[in-house]
Image (cartoon, rainbow over all chains, first blue to last red; front, side, top):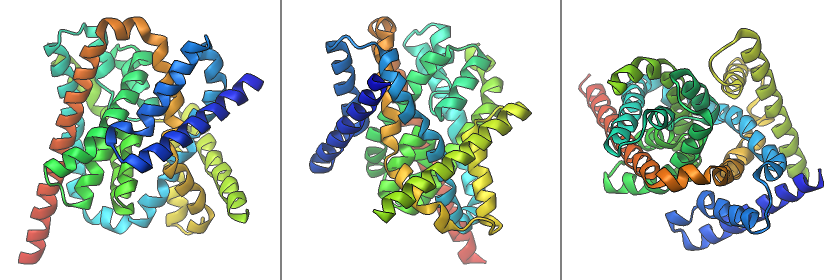
Length: 227
Length: 125
């Protein structure tokens, strides 16, 4: 119990410090989601602390992701009129996004000569963890590896998203939110909220739809990717 | 002080809906996660004025703004997979980065294209 509480405290403090650093320097690569885990994992390795001991407390924090996802109901509700108005645009973009996510993960895995068990674990990497794990198990991947790929996707999307928005001149708030929520699930959504609440609402919806659409499209596209 | 207390209560309230969502998922053997079911429940309650926005807004905005914190323990979990990372780490990273770029660029451009098309159509009518 004491170890668990100590781990929670350590995580919160390291997160808080890395957030302050990020706010000062504003370099995307120094995102708290990259810096804090690096500091924490070196601490664990340095002091020979088992991950399972760390996670006895870490789990308390991970569990808060659940009410956070429920909380996305608030931006969805606030911007329901805009979202309903653009429903068709949203559905087209998300269907495209989900299929591209599955296909490109498969194609790039082939290109770097990854074995099929890794390829299958990579396919659902762009959606929120609990559903990604379920999809992974369903199509024959390794759920634990998928969980890792989901988090690495989140970190990548957090760093790459704003650069892509700038480089490709994505001005529409809706498009910004959709690409962040589609590309990097909850992590992308938190970035979208930094842009503004309308972007945040679009990203929340994108995150939810990406998960649901992946459930449908992953089993259909997997045999094609494996061909 | 009152704000902190209110936020904590609302976080617990949102947690309650996540738990209800988890129960529903278990009972009905749904393929989606309990928190997404919880999201739809709260959305429906807000929509039909059963629940006031002010009862969840503070908690939700706190959770959403500190969301990265909740991802950190799962990111630390990577140290458990040292062997796989050492053997295939660069391949994994390449696939994830290239695929994430592809997905974001395509989704963003498709969405922007259709938003503009949609706006033009509206003007012509």
